[in-house]
Length: 456
Image 1 (cartoon, rainbow, N blue to C red):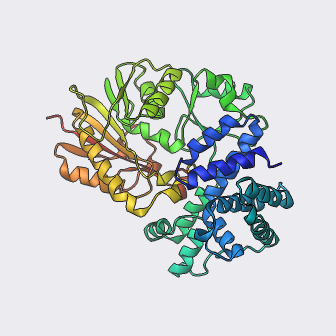
Image 2: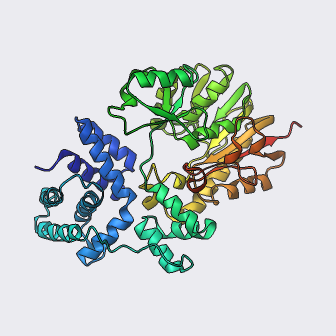
Image 3: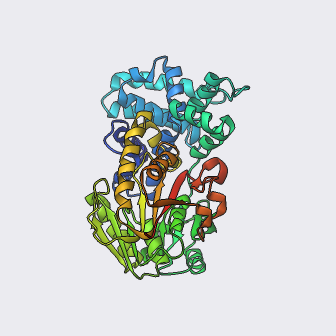
């Protein structure tokens, strides 16, 4: 009988590869069907691992199958990917059991004629585990073809993205970045200062068997020690009582761009799931008016649940499309545009994005971001602050958008983020932009540019 977790992982990967779902959504549906927490964890580990290492897995499958992966039946390719991942990265599972499950999976999806093929490919791969035919690290990184073979295949990143990073930051930094992306991300919490303090949360989590350590830059970030036995922070009372939210550390830092006194009226234009909204509410001391917006019904529902759990009393939620002129007549002291983007800065946490995004996507995304920023600017009061942020690694969506806004928008002046109280100087670049990167900070790649509107 095939392990339930492997069947679920197959379903998840099929949904992602056929474009029916992104990885987080597919995993959420799978967890609903799995009753055992160990099965949920294994399903997540397999599916996430396959997406993270898909470049190398496809190269190995093609090598041992002696045909291009595009020529393989899609369901058989999914079976080979998840089985190859288990053989290479989950060595606690006996190889024979992995191969047997793969053969049974082929039969389960009514591909009986391919069962022998699956068996042969995986056994050949298993025999070669100690000497895998993957491109080695180049002796001369200046050899572009060899360098890109290694970065795109062995380190499993799209070749177009590997080329961009290599050209922009150099081979060594690109390698460190990709190695970062290929490691599991820690569960990162942010203290909800509307309800508790850092010390109180740490003490309560420890009483629930959860060990945490402070983040590197964000003062409210706590990293969960996943090696501690029984660490289940999302099943404890601290979570149920809204004492923390789950939020990446780099994402937590974006809210610091508003400064310690963002004003009485604040607008968060693309607010869901709500982590930055709660941080802003806490900085505002739960006073004034904080309007949190999003456009999609499901995102609004998620935002409402986050705000309710947090205890924020000064937040009003509005379903608003930031891609068109905003409906507000009274201006705001601070407007945050955490713009929808490629997400290429979060490939450690969202590994499927590396295969779903394409270089030709960037111009349309940047154009939409410029429109959003222009509409948001109209809602900023004289003397007010405008913040533009993304979780993208690419200049097309970051400084190019900020520069285009600065060139076309009279009455707004750039603000050097180093002058904003609470923003760590280490995460501000030479132009005064907020920027985190894996190879420099050990964080996902986030970007932020701040502008201030003239008072007259």
